[in-house]
Length: 194
Image (cartoon, rainbow, N blue to C red; front, side, top):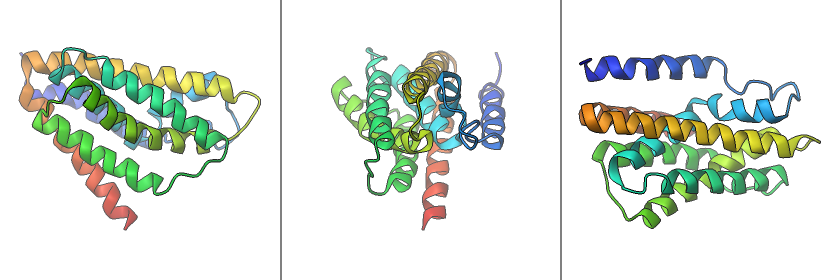
């Protein structure tokens, strides 16, 4: 059996590669299904949040799909708000705070009823979606981009669920370390915004 640190190494490498290619395709007006699908993978903050939600849900509840489904649905709501020009207050600080909260939920293995967990992640998801929606802008292909973005988000959540189940069986300490890392990222982003 591999050590927890070796199990987490691919995630660290993925995060590093993702940070280097942030927001692929959106600086050049390339907005369509593929660009929308790749968009959630393009920012470390969004990727870490979505992955943490999946891992936390897989490790702490029987209905593992409820929190990720809430996140994806309310991310779409937030994205539509962003696309149509609705401005939410403090989007970036709220996204950073979501990393702190999701990381703490994972690190502490906090357990909530499914509805409460869905509400917690869903509230933050609206802000993640709003940030994506503003970046997507308005174009003839925005509906395809939004569909791709939701599918990309769901893909990250499924990856988190699979990772969470594996960590539940083999390395709860690894999951706690991942939660700590996500929280530290949130603290770092909050500090950078001040």
